[in-house]
Length: 240
Image (cartoon, rainbow, N blue to C red):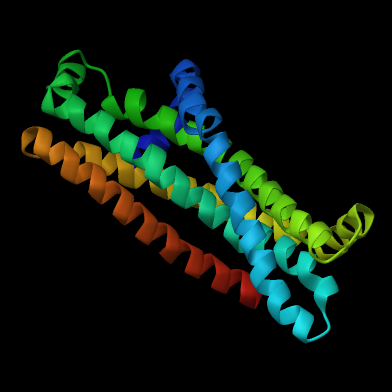
């Protein structure tokens, strides 16, 4: 499935087989636009919690001014991409598995093959394209929401001004912090799409099988996302 998806995404367009951008745009709305409220809300609260927990120890050490540095770096490098991936895995990964699984149970996939159409081209590739575009966007939104949560705590509880919070945040962040998180988001998006679609194609046993594959897609996606996060965090740690 992965080989076919790569072919239809990156090779076939150069052979005159155009990408299905209409389907991809539809998936971008479902995966990205509809997920904006929940991603923003969860990330905002996570940033607020991170500031609360971090300030509790930093105040004791006389370093309350570093609270926003902690929140900004943690959100952009680690928590933002990871929280976004977990939310998307729960929303979209399960939806991918349920959609394709239902089509398999109702023999719609067999109809695709009977008409000489590639089910991977029409069902998987638009989801890959949507994820590759949307995941970095949602991750940046998550980063911003988390930083806003930390900023709110710093201003209301620590008495810092908006200018000081903004200055501390900008001083603590480097471009490396941002692009490492965005690279992770691309990998997480590919993983979620692959697992969700694979579980959909692997459905067995009718409606009960669809339910099992949907659950498996969420669980396996989160496990693989965290495993990928460990690998990339280790690589970035030793690289720089």
